[in-house]
Image 1 (cartoon, rainbow, N blue to C red):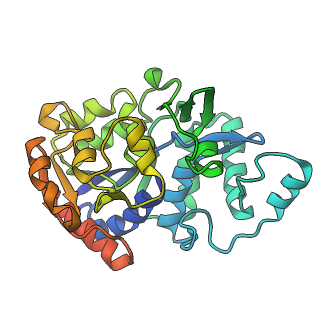
Image 2: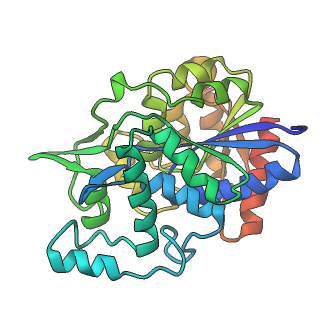
Image 3: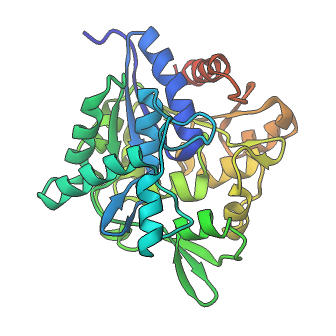
Amino acid sequence: MVTGPRVVLLAGGVGGSTFAVGLRDEVAARGGTLTVICNTGDDLWLTGIRLQPDVDSMLYALAGVKDSVKGWGRAGESLRVAGELRAWGAGWDWFELGDLDLGAHVARTGWLRDGLSPTDVLARLQQRWDLGATLLPMTNTEVDTQVVLADGHMHFQEWWTRHRAAIEPLGFENPGIDAAVPAPGVVEAIAEADVVILAPSNPIVSLAPILAVPGVRAALAETAARVVGVSPIIGGAAVRGMAEVCLRVVGVPCSAAGVAAFYGARHRSGVLDAWLLAEEDAGEVESIDREGVQPIMRPLWMRTPDLTRTLARDALDAAL
């Protein structure tokens, strides 16, 4: 019997999966349940195989098998298949996939070819481990993120991984997302939640695609749950990598207040009720408050499992 809060997390990327582990542990300690709605904008087809980088990062992190040094992929990987693919001139030689990781991709692709939906496939994948959470894709529609460049389009993974965001983008698109629908269970989970949390993920390429799926924003507007976000910006800089580029391109200041304004206050047609910002950004409290979002200042660094769980506890307390 569930005696604690029903928690929904919107997440993608390394930061989202790291936060999810601490949140899972804190929710379990309170006798609650956790549902994670995963970004699928990073998905792609490569050498005939369907990859879901953000989904798999979440799966591996909650299963305790993620490579903690790289922050993604499987621990204890080998690269024999990647070497063979290079020898054949197949795929992207700069997009290295480990053998264990490829096992998941092959299984996924086979099930998709058999007619299963991405939701069904993810349900099968997570049966292997006791994750302590339920994972849902944001949609079953393929809406892979494309980077708009001056001379055309490029898949987000190529722009991010190969070029390290060094090519100046004009914007980001998810073709087909306007006709997409939330995956089964997504709207229901948000509607029934006691708490909804936006992870400290990249706002533009990890969380914006989830929010762009028709029906998700409406579900957030209507839920009785309090919606709390965790800032991915600390001291005016993105915690992970090249998010500053993504923010600049869409005209969002790289600041805790800038990202809070990008999400907006729920009572003003945005999605947030409260926003956790770092102590280093104390000067932005008033600006966030003027946006109609409650600012809550807490330590945000997730350098250890204990710090991550403390942050998760702070987010839950802010919501409850």
